[in-house]
Image (cartoon, rainbow, N blue to C red; front, side, top):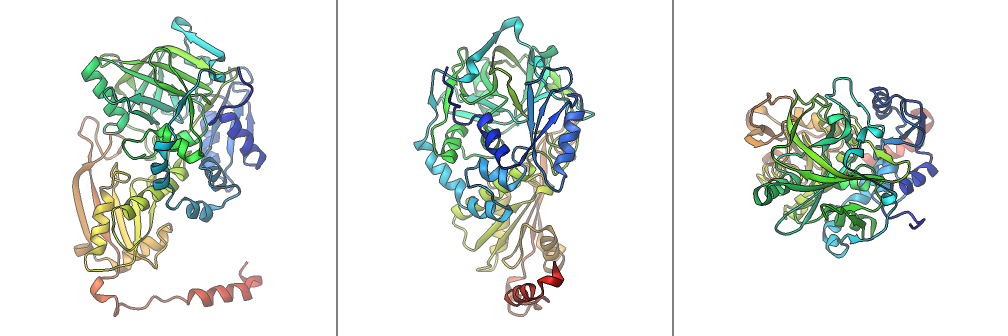
Length: 482
């Protein structure tokens, strides 16, 4: 067993973040709600640090849970290998154009199979498997159970092509720790793979990592382009091939840097009631319903494994900052790749969970330009899932500022002619507006909040100082203004 930490080791990530002062250790929290409540309060703090929980009630020291991994510019910048010590603006600037670069580079950095990893220090099988031997939190008061899968990385494959997919899905512990449900999102690649395995073979293999470098939370929790493995995409981000070990039963990859992983099988008739769970929309996701339950054949873990937690909830939550930054960059890249001129910036607002509200700034080039961009944005692969509002504004509006976007909506759009409605679009059962049992369609509003194209030269001038003059005054009078 090598002493060198594998690439995408969570321990290496923790050591690096600890050295920057962005990690707080928490001792003695209870796994039943208290740990989750401390994490929730931390997301709202003025200075939001990653939390490493140890000495968790009912568990021996060394069995730890990490939260808040991607909740600041410094930590997200480090995770995406964009640089150290970055602020919000610097992360956004350095991320611009990166998703398309990573997508192009992924094919040259495929995951590589290795025979050895710290993960193999302990292999548990059969009746000895118990997920509750580890400090799985009860995150929210009204959750239906203990959810081990929040920052997890769930690996499936296409049975015909062998293409591997990695997704981040919620997973609830079942059968007193002997099994676990996987709530794969309908329409996403993982769910499609599972359905195809069921059709062809009657069962589907799965591996899951529960502790790893948060770059896999990023790739598993955002829309990586189809046909690209999230492991290869992660390799493009870090600039190295990701080492993996293969599950001995499923032959699916597990990141070699994982702390704690399982492998096993899903079958169409193995179901357990799952939920509710406090979701990223800010609401509990409805009543209990049957979900595919994983038969665990093997459990692998390092000595004293660390669980990567990423509990959602009312924004801001554990990964809402990350999703906003990443999806904004991906949407912007996709719009530019589509060949539409004049796109300046896209922003998937955190208050909408990085999905429900997207604003795009453009430099208007022709009549109808704003509507074209708005309708295209609403159905982009990176934006279509559970989007509810798309607002297009002029390039003098900072799309990352809700105040500016709302000001443009209030003063440059007329509801009667500037709002289009798309119906029966891609929604989700997580949508609090979708009643239990109904097909999860949603509608979305397209709002043209640009100055009317034909009135650009005659529209009233904005009442604010020239930016250069304001900057000079700010410097000259800083003793008054700070």
